[in-house]
Length: 163
Image 1 (tube, rainbow, N blue to C red):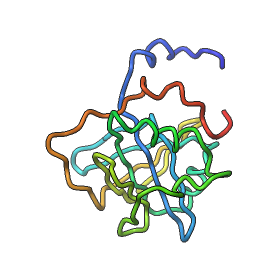
Image 2 (cartoon, rainbow, N blue to C red):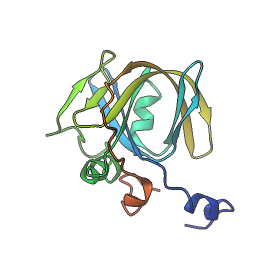
Image 3 (cartoon, helix red, strand yellow):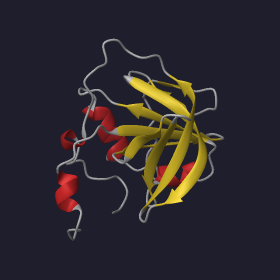
Image 4 (cartoon, helix red, strand yellow):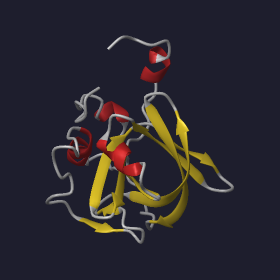
């Protein structure tokens, strides 16, 4: 892949990674996300960026809510499941412990923290689309807060969808 003008800056970053899950009717999807952040305090808002190539993006376009999970340092296997496979070919939720949120979004058991957000807006970001979320349901905080899985620990996972 050709370098871009921002690569040097981006390589210095090592933020947490997230698993975003969604359900529309009986269809479930989820993917590993590296582009996400809280973007407002009042009102609380969080932006998640999904690749246009991703199966989860195609399901999320029809959804009203998304669930966002952070992963603990020891959850690389979960990151590989959601980042290295495509929902076009496999059911990422098979043999996985999860339960539906109030809106139906899959909530992953064992995630150190999660929230469900109502999609309030979508923003074109080039090869990714931003989903602006207003929190509607939040998992109980863990005390003490666990060490999180960061991008540097998963950057070698080959994406399940084509690049």
